[in-house]
Length: 69
Image (tube, rainbow, N blue to C red; front, side, top):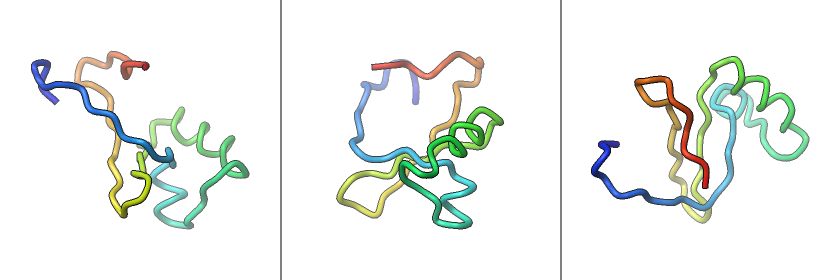
């Protein structure tokens, strides 16, 4: 998103794109694996609550951290 674009929020669950996409792995039992996958650079999906929409979270081009709320 461009710097002048307003922030938006999404309510839902975070899943690692590889395990969720290939095996459907999710939930509390998969948390530690998902953390390892994200730490290794595998993208994280934000699955929007109440819809079938998911958003892949990618880092900024300048390698800065995601903003925390």
